[in-house]
Image (cartoon, rainbow over all chains, first blue to last red; front, side):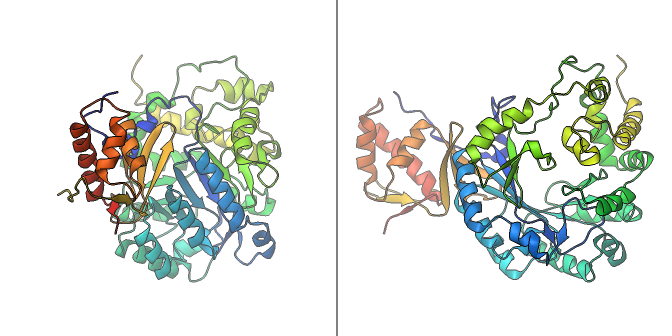
Length: 377
Length: 101
């Protein structure tokens, strides 16, 4: 065998050879570690938050030693990237241990945080062992709006201090926002704030889904914060960047007819294809929102490899013959404009295959926006 | 500018990187700042580069590594030694391997 001219390539992650030939194949690329459901904020729209001092929730959290075992297994399966999320992950005192363990295993690490608990010690850690990014949600750029969402006195000051610490120390931060009734009036200013500071791009999400724990009182609060379909269409039309992205890609979102129309499989998304989620209480999920009891796997009783290699296939093979699914969502030509998926349908209705009026209204309002820009066929 | 290595150099892997074989690709991942660009950049080695990397163990010098590789790969030993030296210098300049004290 002859030696080649070059032995090595310096490549940026998005250009790595790993992606070549990965289309349609299943392999572990990344995973989310949801290390707590607790949060020091009490956001109106949040799908997971439990109080920071909730002893019961804390007791359920997976221990550091179990987390390390899961990380070892994920690395064994080939994971390259891990997202640490919550709740607010910095609430856990062992956050630095978890973070460092991931880094030393050769994983790229991202962190989702509200930034309010960022301390000089976190900065020291991030400077020595850089994250791929720290993603911070901006609920408002004034104390009034921010705290109207978080319902946590002092949170705006803590957020501002945390963001300043991150940026001053050149930690790569990506900013985003969730748009709801409480902060809609400030969206333009929030966008301006984020775009001026984000490491690459800024995104806003106006689609609120319901809680993983199905807490009905809190679900009502989330529903009360949802924008109307017309409001969502309006803000997407008003944001130049979002509008251009949607217009440029409208052929991807709107299909003249849907392929495999006779198939009754529930899952046609990428769930369980390249990544998975570990919940704060040690359950394996195919994606963050898929909480149906028959679609989660208890990692305290089994191995990650078994969950990935066997359990995922069983879940992805689930089917439905209900008209709700087969005659509506399954054959919908604008389903890629819709938040509907089996996971979100379950959170709304308790069934994986049910129709959701609100999702449908939003998708149609978005489609109306785009139809004006569809090429004439 | 590449750091100088010689065939007599004994080198070892830096503790600031992790080498991983992921889905058929052998990559060197920087984990600390100052080694590559730890947030985005990876260093990918082909099977020959991987063979050289795996021989670097803090014990053998580069000449001994080249001799072992000459048994496995075609080519004149002097040419293989130059290749080993070239990659070692590149890895040294990226702080992915270090000189053994």
